[in-house]
Length: 258
Image (cartoon, rainbow, N blue to C red; front, side, top):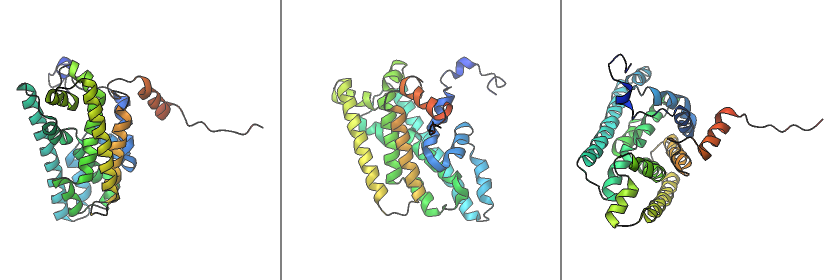
C-alpha cells in the first residue's frame, strides 16, 4: 500500500518488523488473544461497532463508539505532548513524563479495545466503559507498569538512536544521578506499581473481572518481555529461547519405557 501511495521504504524506516516478537506480546492477554492479534495488525474501529449493533441497543452502541473515539483522542494527545518535548529540546521531570507516558505507551487503548472485542460484549456496560473514559486505578497502574518496564529495558538503545527522553533519562536530568542509580529508582517504581496493582485487583469494584485480569496480564507480559532488555527489538538471549519454546517446539511429553 505504501508503494502505491508513493511512500518509499526509507520514509518508513521507523516501522517495526519484528513479527515473531509482536506475535508473542498479545499472548499475555489470555482469552483476548485471537482478537488482539488481529487488532495489532488492523486496529479498525468501525468493524467492531457493527458487531455490537446486533444487540439492538443503539444507545450502548453509541456509547461504545464514543469510548473508542475518546481513547484514540487521548492517545494522539499524548503523542503530541511527546513530539513537542522532542522538537523543543525539553526534558520533562519524571512526574511530568509519567503523567503523559502511561497513556502514550498505549496501555489504556489496548485494554479498551481488547475488552470491547472479547466475548461478544457480554459484560459491556456504560459503567465499565466509563472506567476507561475517566481512567481506573487498575488500568493506570497496569499501563504505568508497562511503560516503566519498557523504558528500563529499551531506554539505552532508544537514547542512542535519538528517541524522546524516557523515564531513566528524565530522572537522571532532574536529579543529576548516574544511569545506574536512575535504573535502580525506576525498578523500585516498578515494584511499587506491582504492589498497587495487587491492591486494586483485590478490591471489590464495578470494574469487570475481565478488565482486572487483562490489566494484570498486560503488566505481566511487559515485565516478562523487557526484564532482560529490549525483548521486542532484539530477538536474542532469553527472548529467542522463549519464542522458540512457545511457537516452534512442542511441549515434551514423557512416555514410560516399554
